[in-house]
Amino acid sequence: MPRPVFIFILFLICNGVHALGQTGHGVPSSPPKILGNVDTPKIKEISGFVASRRNPGILWVHNDSGDLPRVYALNKKGQHKATFVLRGASARDWEDMAIGPGPEQGVSYLYLGDIGDNNALWNTVAVYCVPEPAVDPNGPAVEKALDEVVSIRLKYPDGPRDAETLLVDPITKDLYLISKRDRRSRVYRGAYPYTTNAVHVMTFVGELPWAGSTGGDVCFDGRLVLVRNYAYAGLWIREIDKPLHEAFSRPPIRVPVPREPMGESIAFSNDGKAYLTVAEGLHRPLYLFPLPDELKGSGLLQ
Image 1 (cartoon, one colour):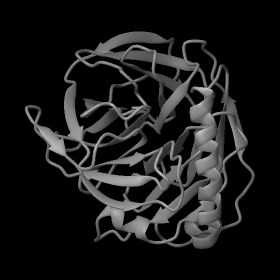
Image 2 (tube, helix red, strand yellow; image 1 turned 90 degrees about the vertical axis):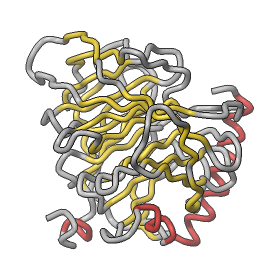
Image 3 (cartoon, helix red, strand yellow; image 1 turned 180 degrees about the vertical axis):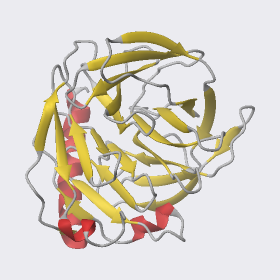
């Protein structure tokens, strides 16, 4: 990230801290656990991060801009287990990934967000959707190609934006992009269903109480939503019979993230009882934070 841009983001985060202090509240949390360190130099700038739904014990990551259109599978110790190249995709500036349902009922899909746009130049952005492949968490590392890649073209209703947060609602299959460089991060919804022969104009549906959003995730059952920036993270409880974005109209619960350089990624664990973070750079640690007892005892995750 260029130095002037980084300074600008720090300025926005400082404003966001003030806003969050006014509107959010924190809860006690258990200390994080370091699961391991990313063990391969191929993964040096993690920007997207989710826990597998199909493969217990597997975490999916991708690099920031400059890599090929590919995703990497790690086990929970950070050991590299697989690389998958998405046929027909491009990687202009991949910034986040999500996991959730897709076109085929009962199949878990990976969503890769080619949504970075530092200078707000691109009229459209892309999200690539592909069935989640199988990975052996105990086998040697493999490299394969993925077919059945679907490209979803999206457009903002109010001009190009730089975004680093991609969410998929597991209930409605709607896509959400959250901007990074606005004074308050703006939330845009791309309503399901999609076609591959049209550009889908998103709808502006709200703002977060801070700027600089760099990643997020939705719990497997759609009831909890996480979004972070470089300094902190917020958790929202979603009313299951209402659109996901309505949760952002309420103050977030502040949850901790580690002091990690360029921490852009956050993901729920597969069972929804914890969340994980990892930062950019070589051999970074994987942190696991148990969710607060207040949420574990609420019945949301039962």
